[in-house]
Amino acid sequence: MCIGVVIVHINVAQIRRDENGTAHFDLKEDFSAFESELEGVDFVAPVHVQLQVNNTGKSLIVNGSIETELKAQCGLCLEPFHYQIHQDYEDEWVFAPQATKEQLETALVFHKDEIELTERILEQIVLALPMRFICSSECQGLCPVCGVNLNATSCACSQDKVDPRFAALANWPRED
Image (cartoon, rainbow, N blue to C red; front, top):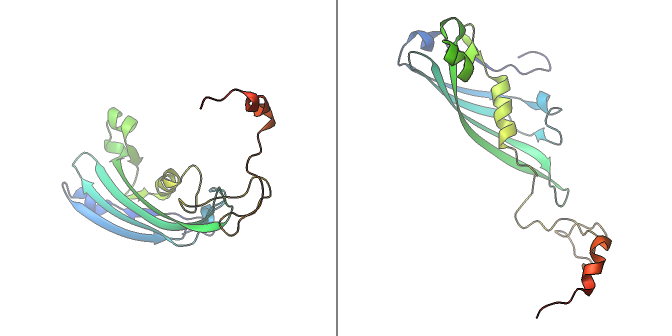
């Protein structure tokens, strides 16, 4: 690991030479250096990566499982909360000097006996993130009038306020 930068890699020298062989890797890394790239998210636990690497004779198939815990801010009530990530993925890796033209277009490439996984792990974490963090399905969010957290207290604000752009529709005849 470099100062301030996480570099996750696995040595595949032995499995690369063992056609139809399998290898397992269990890694834990601190990804807090990437918090600036994941706006509004803090890592509260190391990233745990479990890998199974299978040599097919033509490529290495990497089946991975990523687990970590993040601290994020709820998009409704703005309170911080912990968010669990569990992401499974599969990649095909080919050794550059032996790769066919088709493999170079569809698979990931490694050049020596090590596969550098940092970018792939970070991509999988980003793919596992929701579009908007919600602390729970019961979250009521903030009152749109006074801004109070409706999960913690109630307010006496009138929720019947109509957007001025739709005020003319209030006079529209209603069907009973």
